[in-house]
Amino acid sequence: MAVGLTLIFGVMRVVNFAHGDMMVWGMYLAFVLSTRAGIDPYVSFVVCAAALFVLGVAVQRGLVDRILAAPHEMQILLMLGVALVLENTALLAFGPEPARVRSPLARLTWDVGPLYVDVARLVTFGLAIVLTLALSLFLFHTERGRLIRAAADNPYGAMVIGTDVRRVYATAFGIGAACVGAAGALVSPILPFQPPTGLSLSVTSFNIVIIGGMGSLLGAFIGGLLVSVAESLGAVFLRPSLKELFSFSLLILILLLRPAGLFGRRAS
Picture (cartoon, rainbow, N blue to C red):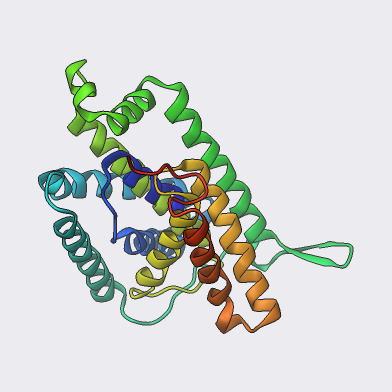
């Protein structure tokens, strides 16, 4: 979830406030594929990622591309508008009731000594690592990935050497949306969801990305681990309803010590 958000910001410097709502649509796509076609979400996440890639490219080409040079407040308002459209469309299509995707893995646990390991969460964690590594390999070891990094570092220089920057931006936004679509499908058997869930998912995404450093792939991954551990500790030592107190306290601490995040670069 956070990797997709940091990729979009790192390449285009656009803060995607619709990120959480895109993830909710990934969840609902997994729900439809599970209930209508009987496809397990741990298989259908590939289809969800592909569908969200198409949505991301459409949003970038049709909307975001028109306001890249606009002030940041216009970008924020645009993405908030996209978020509201996605949320209310999901509300019309699926209703307000909470949903959860059924999967055989969600009912399995492994006994490891005194510990009970949730198989669904373990598989989701493993796939998240694999997808993050695959994205890293794509960005650093393929021609298209090098073009994306070049456009992120110096768009004008990339244009001078013949790079179609608009196409690169669309690809990057699509990949970021595909990441969050896959994330939505993978957590759909674990977390109940409904259309307004997108707001809390967006807040969590921003928390992770700011802690790790905006635009840093490694920072998004490490930030996700830190936030998850902080919230788990909060649920153990306080109560589950107060778990976010730990993660946002961590955010404040990081901002005080390293305003750019753990792996972020200061703006010059």
